[in-house]
Every structure is written in structure tokens, then in C-alpha cells.
Image 1 (cartoon, rainbow, N blue to C red):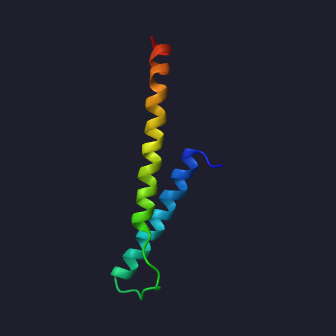
Image 2 (image 1 turned 60 degrees about the vertical axis):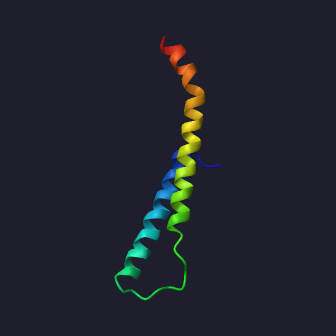
Image 3 (image 1 turned 90 degrees about the vertical axis):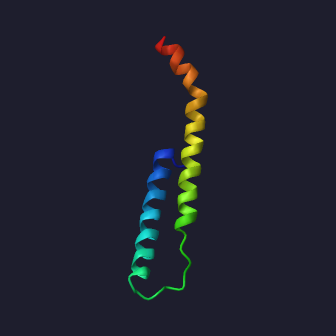
Length: 68
């Protein structure tokens, strides 16, 4: 299983690739008959961040007790 940072790196790389494909198509490169998945990748990144924020929120009271 991948750690959240590893998942983020994979998704960011995938998003970058999708962006470059979309850009090339917009600049006149022939389409490769494949729909863009950039929106899907962006949603996955947002979901990963939301999950990570949820974990941080749940653990933050522990950190504040340790700091106190």
C-alpha cells in the first residue's frame, strides 16, 4: 500500500501527463481517440487531500496536549 505522499506524487505525475496531452491536442496535435482524465485525476487529488486533512484534524488534539 502506498503512503499518502507516494499517492500524491503518483497523482500529480498523472495530472501533469494528462495536462500535457490536453495541451498538445489544443495546439493542433492529432487526437489519440482517448478522453482526457484530467478532471478525474484532480478529483482524486482533492479526495486524497481531504482524507489527509481529516486524519490531521482527528490527531490534532493529541498534538495540542503534547505541546501543552
